[in-house]
Length: 473
Image (cartoon, rainbow, N blue to C red; front, side):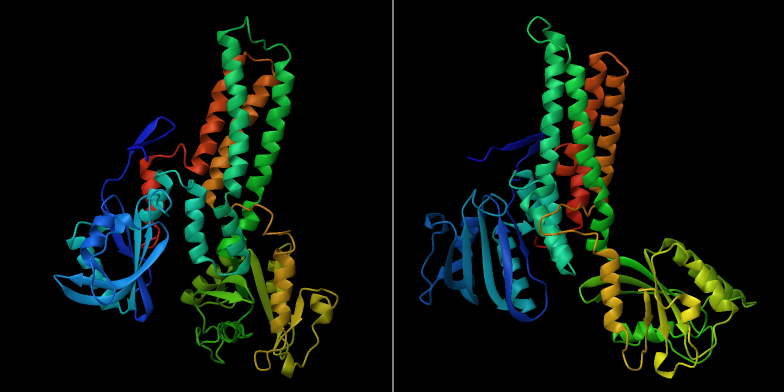
């Protein structure tokens, strides 16, 4: 039987007693819509609104087995609203661990909203964003990393992100964190027991053992924290600045790869005066593109602001696509632009190669694998561009299927805080400080790691996390 409350790190969370309902599919006309309902009154409400079969027989949901699906009609005051299939999931074997039903109706927005109104009229209320998943978390079916991974799966834009999110849903981060927390808790408990009962527990030589354990935990957590840089790229994409002097074809390049007229293109230098941002999946690699203003000296006040923004974009970008125009001679402005990408992750695009008049090999280096000869007209160099980016960024990502990468800055910050506390403990051990000081920092580390899995988080943080979920999830 499900307890009426859940205790996490001494905080009591009361079980929800209200029954909630929401449309779980995106609104708009389509094949089907799914309306989900969860809570103690689920089956009672279903019995009131669902009639089985064409003969509209009464239906008793509580007598049905879990994970069964039933054909019939949604009715309101004996008026048939829609022909549906109703799936039943009996507590605790459901997404929320509560009694859950899912109504599969025809895919018209009006029909779905009408059914939701009928459910509300019969005793449910409309669910808040993410409330189904929040209940799954509070009811102990999943931890917070798994809950967050569900939205990451929904928002995945490439295979790397999907695989990483599936690993999180599988519990990889949870397992890594729990192993570290168990070791910390074991050492803390032993030290406190020895301090309280020195006759039965001895701390002689324990400092050396503790030092080894701490070093192991710290190294494992550092590895997990360091995975965030790759994890961020997997989840959020690569912040990419397209730079060059005016009129080298930056906006034409953006329009070509976006397959749309996103930027104004003219023969007049300085047409782009502000940064144009677009998001692109290039052969499965997500790029957060910034088309910048042409970099050059100008007396135009507005244009100079655009140039300053371009220089700032170069500082912030994780990847720079630096463009030169092969139909024009390499000049001092090109030299200056080239100097800006020194020691940066950069790809050099020699544009307009189909009408090239000048050879840039001696300027940019012909043996440089990151130099691509490109043409917006013919598409030459496009496939080489995606392959080069993949080699630059994803060669370091060894095996997304089997490696754990954290993709959430909240996780990284909590893990780093735990590392700091563990290093303080190790420092105290090495300095021969009293053992009772060890437990203070050890418990701090334990609680910081609990923030990752959700065992030591505040109500406000939980509410904030789930408020960012989509409706019906």
